Structure formats: C-alpha cells, structure tokens
Image (cartoon, rainbow, N blue to C red; front, side):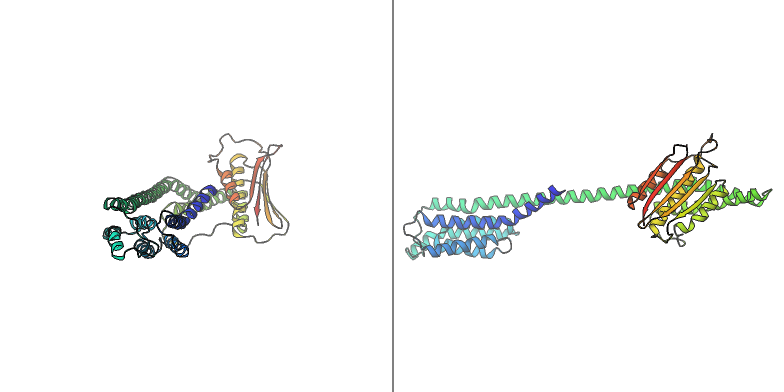
Length: 389
C-alpha cells in the first residue's frame, strides 16, 4: 500500500510539473532560435523577457489558454517565432473541446504563417529583432505542417487516448460497484435462507420442547419434576427469544415489533448459576478484588465466557463440581471457570458445533482481551479469560 501511495504521489507531482517543464523548454528554444542563424544580432534583454513570458504562459496553460495563444501570435508576427506554435498547437488539441475552436485555431495559425512574407514585404525589414528569413512557399507550407499539423495530430491522439483510458477506468469502477452489489445481494439472500431454515426447523422444535415442558409442569407427579419442567420451559422460552434476535440480525433490517431485550451482563450471572444448579451442576461463585460496575461490553463478554464454559461442562462433564471465579484487577477482569473431572463420562454427549470457544476467542480478541482453555493434569478443564475493564 505504501508503494502504491508513493507511486501515486510521484505521478501527481510529475503531472503537475509537466507544464512548467514544457515552459522551460519553450523558453530555451526561443533563446536558442534567436541566438543563431539571424542576419542581425537580437536585442538580448527583449529576447530574455519574451522567452520568460512564453515559458510562464506555457506553464499556466492548463488553467488559461488565451495568454499562450496571445503570446504565440505576437511572437509569430513580430519575431517570426516558431517554438511557441508547437506548444500552442499541442494545447489547442488537448484543451479545446469543440471542433470549431480547433478548426479556428488551425486556420489562424496557417494564416499567420502564410501571411508572414506579405507582412515582411509591406514592412520591409522592420521586424523588432531582424527580418524574417527568405523562404519559398513550399518551405513555408512544410513549416506550417511541421509546426502546427504535427503537434495538433499528436495532441488529438493523446486526448483521444486519455478519453479511452478514462472510459475504461469508469467502466471498471462501474463493474466493481455492480460486483459489490451482486455480492451483497447474494449475502442477503443467503442470510434470508438461513433465517428461514432456522425459523422453520430449529424454532419449531424448540417451541415443541417448551409446549411439552409446560404440559409436564402442569401434570407433574411430584415437586422435583415440576421444578425441572419449569426450568426446561423457561430455558426454552429464553432460547426462542435469543433465536428471534439472531433471526432479526440475519433478515433484512426492519422496525422491531417490540423493544429488544437488553443483552445479559454480570448482574444476570446469579440467574445463570441458579439454572445450572437446577440442572444438576454443582457450581460455586467466588469474587476476588474490589467488585465494581464495568463497561457494558466487558460485562457482556464476561457473561458469555461463563455461559459457554458452563454449557461445555453440562455437555461433557455433567455433575462435576465447578468453580466460577471473578477476579477484579485495576485494569482488567479475570474470569476463570474450572470443573473437576467428571465421575463418569457420558456415553452419548450432547451435540455441539465445536465453535463456542473459537467464537469467544474472536470476541475477546476484538475487545483486546485473551482466552485460554485447556485440560488440567487431574482431568478437569479450565477456561480463563482476561477482559480489559
């Protein structure tokens, strides 16, 4: 990227300096032309001033053309000056946008060159810096073709090439915009398809779980069964709420039918632990350091760490004693969830995506934190997160 930026800066500098370099070249050509091959020695001061004026008008020709045309016309009539015709013809071809203007410039330049012998005859040798050299009509025509026709042709070709390049660049930009739009449409269609599948399959099955849990709660034969059914029904309703939020993100944005539920923070951690205990998990909470309110993003990240860790304990080590520790440091919060080895391994572990801890690592990396998760030597498992506070 730095190389591209440096190259672009050099290109802009070169493009901006090009007219002034051309102006310096024009000044040098004027001085060289009038310093050699003349029958009378020129007046040095006048030539220097005229050369400087010609160079300045050429350097500013991208902003204003008429000073260059005026100086070129005066130099052609008074001094038989030819270098200015080359520069003026080139800029006429590249800057004039209407064909009639280019034709008018070409006619004026040709008339000036053709009328020079007549003017010289009428004025004698009264040119300011000496007489116009005696040349034939054929030589005069060839000079006009060389000084006016050639730079006009080159300028028209360069202008047409610039137009083609600009058209290709605009076409490339348009194709890029269309490609981005098509990719966004494809992503939106895929998100809609995923949301539809989740709604039709996952939401339907979770709704059935909630309904059956509610029926079991009503017809429970004992208090323990009623409590377990109520827990399943509550967890299922919360899962439906979370699923609704995910579907809202996947689908096209629209006005919500009801106010969104705020995401859970550390204040909701007690409810999460109660639900885990009700599901048969022996979990205890410990707090170290000076407990305080943290930024909402940090508290949400801490809650998700504990939630994912407890979910993994339920899935792989159901019934194992688990310790949840919140250690408040001056500049960060350390969250540790450790479970003891399970008494016996599940024969049929609950299914999972295997991406829970990966998602947590990505979440904490974005927040500037860090996550470690590994087995302990005694067979337990520890999840440790460092969250900037």
